Length: 309
Image 1: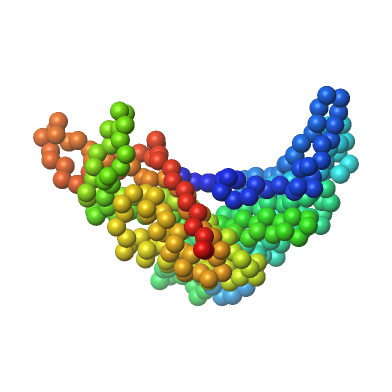
Image 2: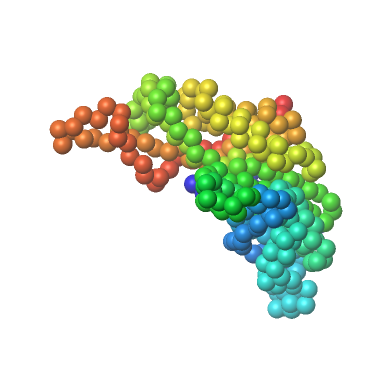
């Protein structure tokens, strides 16, 4: 499950009340909230500040909640910042943020867009970043310059900045995949006339999830927090006996919350990876927990928010 978006029913919808409450009327119609932006901006940033270079791939999604009734109603583009300018701004500011964490870069973009486009009431910036892994080989010259694709998960950040000064900074990890080959259970669940699910007292369990946390301080130690959160996730999963996907997701969210004091709440969302034993009996082969299906569809989705009491 990739590219998951924080659902608006879990955290506040991105809206500027000063704009959303105003009706822009034509004959028989009223113009409500309106937004636009640029999605899927993909690029590479290379940090050349030290002898060991760092290379990251990025994807940026930028959305504006704006007050532009004349654009929609009349086709008057005088105050409309083109989406091409959004694309160029992301790349131009990237040159100044090759060493920055995604949260810092996203916050700089949000501030720039509010300066450049007065009709924009709220700028919502979502960045996903993946480090390329340094390629270690005996023939390589001093200093890291050769890379290979990095394993998952990916870093991600989301900054929502309003013109009235309201800001929400979120960081996280995407595409975290966890798997255990024994010990998980699934028992005692509700049944109706359509339930065919078996009781499991010892099953394989896998999940692919996104973890997104909200930071109380926009000047937080983003890199340190992400590192501690990642370690907390893996350690919590390794020491956990899963009773259900819901049980595991809550446990992981609690572990991340405990790992970083600057986090106010954690959203864990993703899919339970269904891994069923393949029936090999038609071929005269016993399958004693060795061969499993690996299809990702259909998928069972789970999400939970864990916050401080």
